[in-house]
Amino acid sequence: MIYRKCKDLLSVQNFGAHFSLVLLATECAFTMMHCAIMLSSQSGYYILLVVLLIFLMDSEEWKSCSPCIRGELPQDRSISEDSHDEDRGTLVSLDTILPDDLLEKIFSFLPIVGIIRSGSVCRRWYNAVHSGNYKWSNIMPQKPWYFMFTCSEEAVAGYVYDPSLRKWYSFKFPCIEKSNWSASCSCGLVCLMDSEQRNRIFVCNPITTHCKRLQDAPGGRSPDYSALAISVNRKSQKYTVVVAKCKQVPEEYYQWDISIHIYESESSSWVTPFNENLVGWRGGDECVICNGVLYYLVYSTGVLGNNEPRHCLVMYDLSVRPSCTSLMSTAVPVPCSLTCGRLMNLRDRLIMVGGIGKPDRPGIIKGIGIWELSKKEWHEVARMPHKFFQGFGEFDDVFASTGTNDLIYVQSYGSPALLTFDMGLKLWKWSVKSPVTKRFPLQLFTGFCFEPRLDICS
Image 1: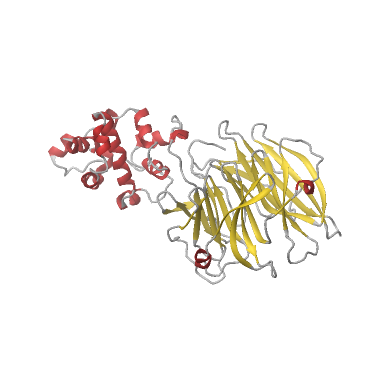
Image 2: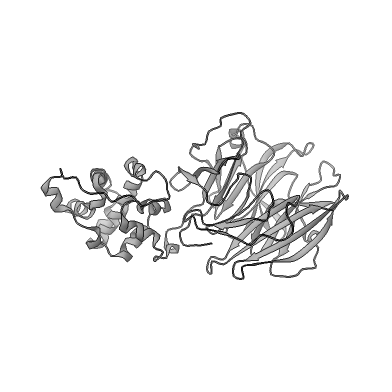
């Protein structure tokens, strides 16, 4: 009885040749769907439909139907004239089965890649996915995706890794023109800054491909160093972009001019509330916003001993404008001698992933650690086990590492291997092997993560 009902529900004209696959999945999934059957008959059928959609989404036929995850609208398909009459008699329109709100509710139970691919099935599903009527903020929580690509002068295209389904998808990132652009992500939005003039800035949602170019950042073009950070308010969806620029004072090797520039999406304008001349320290390319505070890694330009840290963390309260407080008065030493440091905001917790240098040779990496800052004190969260560290092969003293929510990604610039660390489970795990391949010995790779969301717009 249930089997026949599912067959009737799923005998939708636009599925065409995929019926046999779906019905086969039905027989294989009965034990998984026992709880759905125990519900009221109508609710049970809808949950069955969700499960079958997941089966279909993971099939080779589905993938061939939608080779790119963007979910373009296909041409309408019609039933072959050779179809049997009795099959034609069971065909019904999905419009007569599910109202719009219930169809969108079913979509909300799917992984986000399933929602996107659903838009390729038929025109009605495309409209349901892209109309914007449904509050996609209600969909199930999604783990951050990692976008990996190779460093080159060509158009930036690569693959994204979905840790929930442990799959890679071909992906062309919007807006970004070159692989050495700076990137920062927050709550589904990615902020990108050009690597040459460092004043052209874009904010985009890589899933919807909606992109906006901001007014050019102040502070002059082509600083010696620049760092980029974005923070999005999840409720209002307003965002703040910060650019920290650092330029050497002419003929003064130990003096560096640092300026902080802030963009608010609500006012669509820039302000420059802070400028300072640092002696013996310079800014770099690593900063992040956490709980309304900008955290910025600075680097020593003086002569240090082997045991003295070459990095230092400074803080700037974005709510205080202008500020006369010196950055170095807020300085927090790093927990050990680092080869490099990567800052990230994980659920409003400031996390640093760093390469641990050898005491006698600070520039030589011997491991990777993860620390959390609490009340100006660093607490070690984890260290990468040696077997994973060795698994990268030749590991340079600098590397790529980003994270959001509870997930941290670590990638060597010289290898497409990708390692994840779950902050909640304290678990290290390799991703599925990346389809990005190394074609020559000196080829470099990079990447960054972002939260896949449909409900936020730049």
